[in-house]
Length: 81
Image 1 (cartoon, rainbow, N blue to C red):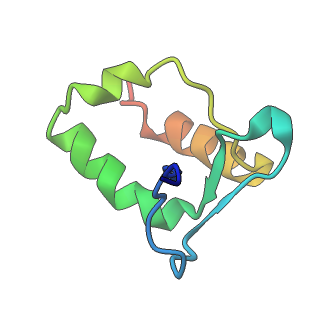
Image 2: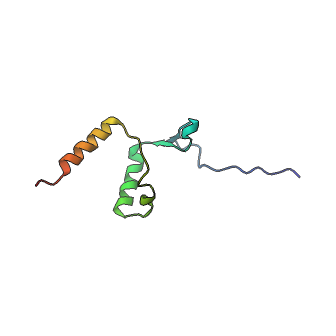
Image 3: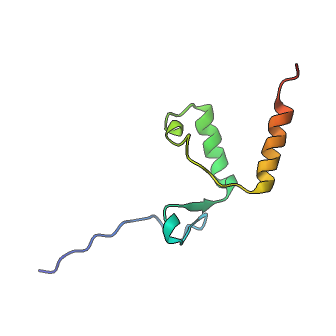
């Protein structure tokens, strides 16, 4: 009797909204467009989902120009004294 080999199912292969990084030291990283995940994250924040706390200390990498825009937004969003 031949032995069965189990495989892990990663979802449909036709999906192109994310790409797995091929570097061996970053094999758990996924690259996605911000527009693809932002609506879901915003909804999770509005709904105060507990699972967000699990990732509160995780680091994310963003482009320098996005970081500058976020800093400017943060500065101008402050309530005036």
